[in-house]
Length: 113
Image (cartoon, helix red, strand yellow):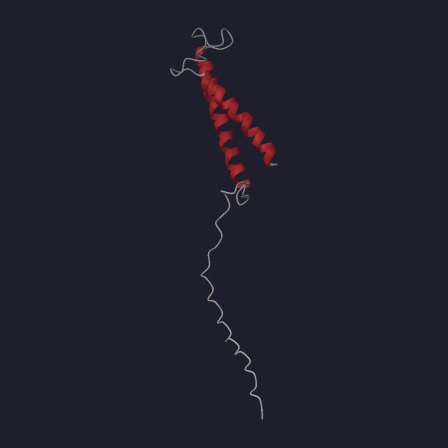
């Protein structure tokens, strides 16, 4: 599911970038060639309205897909690098156990007379 949404998100992103780059900053249509925009198909004003509406729709889809992908992937963090792993928990050093008393060397028994 996430892969499908990610692919759709990629296509919407590319389309949004393309639509934004086609627009003129003065709002004069496609910005290619004359002020007629797409020629006799639409007027300059109609082209600007179409591109503005398309940008708004693609922006809303982009926003919705971004939120849905973020909600689907929350809490699924996977350590992909040694840098992503948290440092090991440091604990206080354990107190060493007391050493056993040294055994006394065996004293040879005194010879009996």
